[in-house]
Image: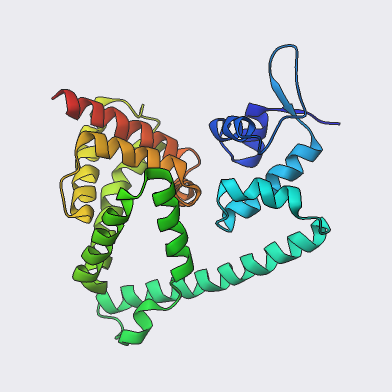
Length: 258
């Protein structure tokens, strides 16, 4: 039977080594055994359990609840997978609606098509937004609720067109960073500073307040910690989110010294 080390399993699954270590520490995913070399080794059973964990995470289940679900759910695994499939199919349907909404919004902003007010919000999931907010509060404490409410108020103030424009600005600020990543530039290289300064300024504009170096570095940790961020950022290239987080932290450290 094939056995995988942590690094091999990370490459196979797309889950970071740090996350696998964390799963071991909290008892969510223990290795099959520890070798004499002190390496963790994972077998087929652990691979299947990791798949279950990833399904639950994809569906927004908090880590603290996943272990309980895996231990208490006695249904046949095929039944569980069928349930996951139905939920993911619904998510795909909603994502397609979101894509249509985005395309129509772009068409209106460019003057190609008029859009009815009721169509501006098709496809958005209040449940997904609530899940994200709960995760932020769980990780960063109750003071995060005040930040969330202020962010909502700012989005409402901007309106659909203003928010779309801000998001477009974010894409423009991120594009040079993606290009630097693809060219293989070291994320801690100070030559990235002009690109990061633009990204930093965009973050401050989105927050509608100053973004101190420590807050910018904390945002990098947030990018790394939340699975949906990794999934979205890495669409531009596997490993980009890790590169960006390292670049942001290095830039924040240089700002703090200055």
